Image (cartoon, rainbow, N blue to C red; front, side, top):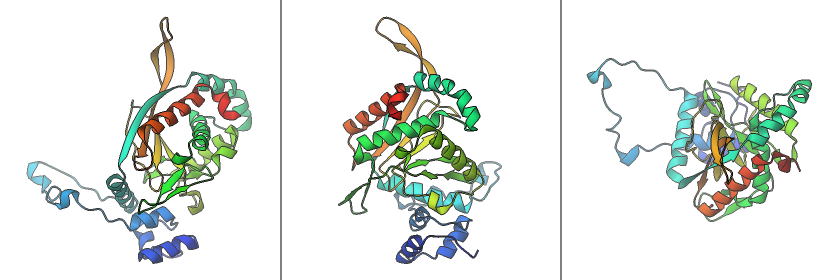
Length: 293
């Protein structure tokens, strides 16, 4: 593979790590190389407990099998996730958000969305709400140095959106999400998700996120534990909203609730702050007009 597309800073990092960027591009199976690819390319996974015997098994001894090769893209992603899981002492805090007002507001805007040609999904509200909360909780909008001696606090809010593709998860980034309105966010989410499926996301649209969202709402589930995407210190997971009984002080009422799962790096964030963060976030979703101010 020739004509590898990579910013000068990414090429410099590759040289610093002793990584052949041409070979890395061949390993991944694409020409566009981002900083995260170089970082992941330098992480070699160690077998659990240093013992490979758990995996070196002739499975055909126990019955019929077939085998398939893991794509280069998936191998790089696996190395990155293994490194993140082993290096970050992560904790997951679970909560719920009342989505009734968001859904009512979306219905109010349905005609305008059609006129604008924009698909207004609940995810746009999640991105807008997360951008607001990150401004109120700057420690979540940070990155920790490799030696754990410096915390880099960011004066920008970029939100990563995990997209499920045939090649694996791709996380394009919405820049300056806190400065964009709901319509612009909805348009960018749709555009990035579509181009991610076609592997047409540009290198400058990857990396540098303040925090990422991984949304399983369209599939199902009640909770999960997302893996923090370094060098971020937290990640927000969302699963499908469902009608649930909520006590209003006199009786149970049916309320549309969305499960929220916040995984965070415990070296930077403590449990009380994580609970406050997610409670504030849920508050914005319960009253979406507040997040528009």
